[in-house]
Image (cartoon, rainbow, N blue to C red; front, side):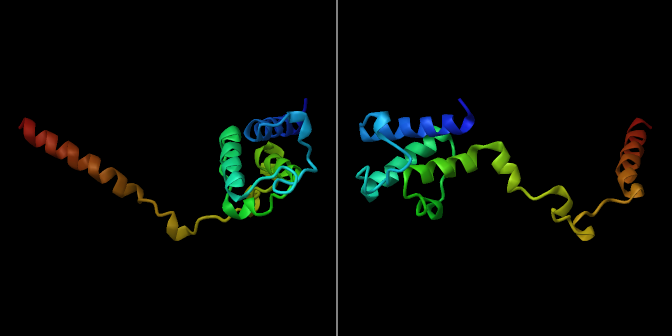
Length: 127
């Protein structure tokens, strides 16, 4: 079973459990509201279950685009498949670099100064 099939099967099992239906009766072509009969509250509860099952957070803006079971499968595949995640990542060569002012470093002499002061205090204590 591929990762995509595993995601689809886990989603269908979650839907079946939540809706108290046979998992075989749920297909990617089914609409969440029309075919599966979800009302607004049911849809919100279902999204919570999906977030728990797949250990992710689904932003409200993303939920609006999830009309069919297949939409949810595609969404989860994009979010959970490593290849999809790296395709959306910014390549290192084009990633913004910090400005020189943001990367302030101490001059070498300033780094040694506290150590010299500590040695001087220690020698005074022993004298």
